Structures are given as C-alpha cells and as structure tokens.
Length: 361
Image 1 (tube, rainbow, N blue to C red):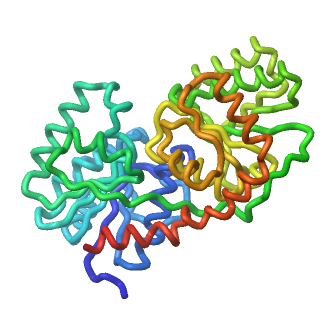
Image 2: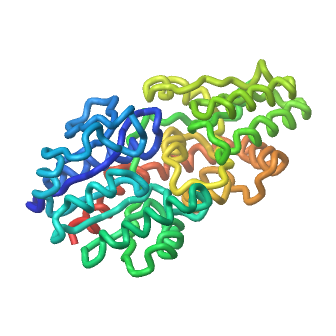
Image 3: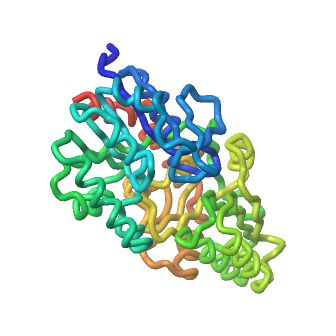
C-alpha cells in the first residue's frame, strides 16, 4: 500500500561523471515510489532519463546554486511536502530546503560522506560557518540524519550530537549477469573504477603492478574514471618512470554500458582508498562476481570481510596491496563465487526494505 504522505527528494546534479552519489539518487527515486508518493527536485544537471523537476545551476556549479535564487515552482513543491529528503550536506540545496520547507515537515539528510572526519580538514572555516547556519535552521524541526554505513554515524554525532541518526544502507542496480573468475588467464587484469582523486591512492595500484611484474607476473592495470587533470598527469608520469606505460591503461570516464562491456574481462577490483563512506563501485564489482581488494578505510570493507569476497588491507603500501592481490589471485574462483552468492544483499530490492522501515515511521 502506498503511504499517502507527500515525499520530496532534493539533490544537486545527477550525472554519470559524479559517480556513486548520483546513482544513489536515481536508485532511491525509483524504489521509493514503490511505497510513497514522491517528487524529485534537482538543482543542476541531469544526463539521464528520469522524471524530475530540474532547475539549472549557475555556471553548472556542483553546489546547486540556481541561476535564480528564488524559484517559485521549487518553493511550491517544498510547501506541499510532508517528508523532505536532502541528498548531500554542504550545498545550496540543503539551505534552500530548510529555508523554504514547512517547519512541520519531517526532514532527512543523507550527507553522502561529507560530514566524515576525513573531509572536515578541507575548508574548515567555511564548513564550520555552514554548520552553524544549519544548526539554527533545524532548531525545533523533526530532522534525522541517514547514513549508508554504520561507520559514518560517529563523525555526524560529533557535529550534531542532539540529532538522531539512522542506518539506511545503499542499494545498487546490477550491471548484468555475473561472471565467475577462474585462474586460467594469461594476463591478470586489475581494475580501478573511481573518480581520479588523491584519496583513492591509485598510485599504490601502479606501484603494486611494478612489484608483481618484477616477480615475473603478467599483470595489467585498467583505470576507469576521470578527475583531477594534474593528478592524472602525475599518475601517467609515474607509470612512465616505472616503465609501465604499456600495461597501465587510463580509459578516462566510461559510460555504464561501456563499463558493463569491459568488467567481465577484469579479474580483481582495487580500492586502497584513504576514505570512502560506502563505495558504490565496490558493491557493483561484487555484484559482477569480481573479487575485491579494499582498504579498511572503505566502509564496504565490512561486507567484503563478512562475505569473503576479497581481502581487506590495513596498511596503505604497495607491498601490502601486492600481497593481497596475490592472495586473491591464488584463490580467485572461491572469492568470485562468494561475491555472486552474496550480491543479493546489495540490491535495491533488498536494501529498500530498510529505507521503507525508516522513512515511513
């Protein structure tokens, strides 16, 4: 039965290049409709076929600042909402929603990792000022923070000690039918699927490839994603210095269809990141039967450990990463089968049950 309360989701741009958060908005919008009447409001760009109220942002900025500061239609949508769900935190969308939403509405904010300690060191003064404004705006309102992983709760409670926090989890859409990886390949294909950013530690992946090739292992690395141009050039230079230009492949941004085509050719997924509040790409890799090596800074590491879909490393070094890759390689079929057997736990069909329980309280 559809809950009759009017539900509105608020978000900045949802485009493929923005990665996981965009896919979360799209997936949540699709499945929330199963149990609640909902509208989706986007301040920014949309590059997919989705039913939404779209308000272009000024110079396509990532924070959702619209070309006009007052949009009567957006305000009207908020005024009809009984439940307002805000994706992100340090954005104009958050301010707009709290300023124009009804005081009697129930509010949910999903920060998508932006309130984690790792992120707090950047632009500390501006973020502190923004949080102070939010504290004033949410006073005497029914507001709950919702998170993708349990580890995200601690950092939010430090900044908003009086606000309730609920675990929702995140779902994924399967890329296709999974493939069991077997140890019958002549070349071991490693893959990174992420935005190119310092915290992803793609440099460690390149270094691990060098160590393995020094040991006579035929291995290649495929980097699927784009990002910081200066860092990308630095990583390409690292590959050149290590004489790996022919085996480290920078594919740039790839569409979902293109990733779906290339993923079955990969054998191990790598994410030795310094911080990830969920990591949708890890979940999608597991759903394809792809064994994973992740750091314990990746929230999905608990799933990897619990379901034995790969190896979790605690030391961010090329040696530690290399050893983990070789461990997975030597038992790759079992890790792959474990991934396939556990992938249903990551589907929106399964995860949305918890969303419904929390959002319909």
